[in-house]
Image 1 (cartoon, one colour):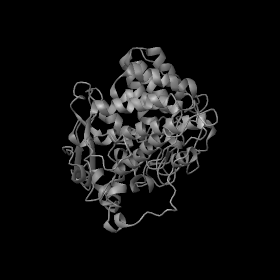
Image 2 (image 1 turned 180 degrees about the vertical axis):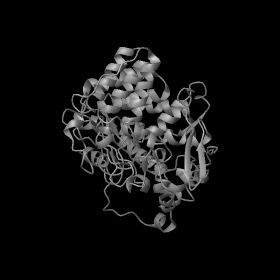
Image 3 (image 1 turned 60 degrees about the vertical axis):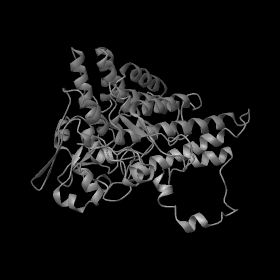
Image 4 (image 1 turned 180 degrees about the horizontal axis):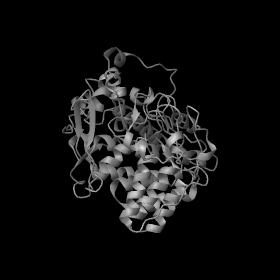
Length: 442
């Protein structure tokens, strides 16, 4: 089930070994909180990046592509087999996290909640619920079909591991069951989490509202996405003024900055982490000269447009930040015909992105015009955030926004048409062998 634990550990000598009596089994609230705060090896620094690798945020030059690992090189061209016999961390790590979350949820119930531990008990339970919902969402975004209300009841989703027993047989839920579980976990977490976190590596009500907004947007439920986006903004409305940052710095934005709601860094992939990626030329040209994102996000000192503007300073920000939620609110307002509200949210964001005194508020006379403006700015604002794959999957269902992706490597052209089967990544072969669940067609 959990490849990181099972396939790497199930050896006869390990199974035959007698347990060490000195090992501590986490059972107390501090133990369980310490598991949740294990940011170095489990949480916060390993958000799946396969979607970003397959997106159109960037391209790579042919010699650089040849230098990539076989799985990255295959994912870049949307090959049928992208793992080359390896077990992808983008599948393993979320399920490892879910294992921890399930263990914590089971064991926190064995601890009596009283006046002396109330806030700590609630934080542990709420954090584990949020984490499970967050990781189910990440997995569904890669390994299940895009949500479609007309087929979600029959489309295969992901295995929903709800217990820590690794011997429990895995089965694939439907897409509808998958998203219902994500929503249930996130909504239940709201009953326990604090409004704002003690540390940005911990979840909060603000983060749960934001993830519900992201989830409902993915599902096309714009009324509920708007409700939760606005609920999030009411708790954390802060937007950073980009005029306060130095465009000459290699990493302009501090980690855990004021816009960060919940911190996650993307898995380390060479194409992003080693700055091999070149920003798509269409995106780069779309930034106006007075738009500070052109300089804070992108470095052109080597003659190519290289991304530098992450909120994590390293491999790519994969968490949740206020700017995304303003854009969710703006998009939902536009889709619901609330033009003024959509432009208010969008312009509030943009006036913090342009050189002081140069921004002229955008206007729209129709809901369709407002929507196009919002999606255009979403494309520029959330570059290399691990969200473009999600947007491609959901927007491809609308002919107005569907695109065909193209790669050109030494004259060989690779394409990914809208709604292609390759928008769903294959389940690792080891998982298929262990559980017998159905593979995604490619």
